[in-house]
Image (cartoon, rainbow, N blue to C red; front, side, top):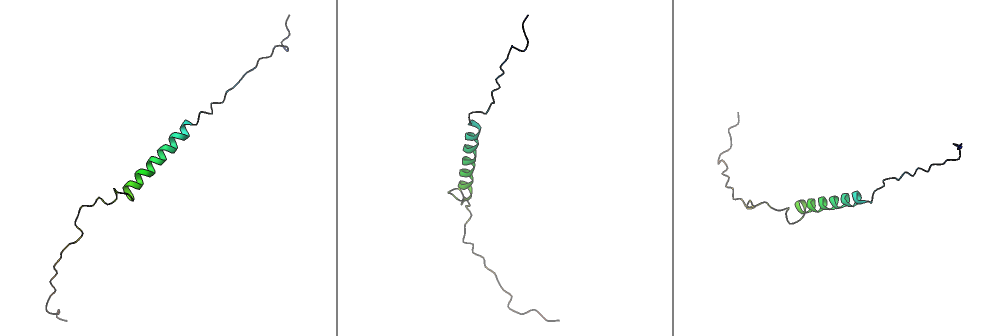
Length: 69
């Protein structure tokens, strides 16, 4: 008869820590978002306004003062 106290089972649990691929992808996404924001807000794509900056406006002022009541 075998004694139950003598049999030992070894259970190995491996923690799925990952290879760090998620962190690398997250850093790349943040860098791409920052580059896109710089391009649109501060870089060459920032001044895409094509309207003329010199506007000629003629204003005619009245020649007489308004009547006081």
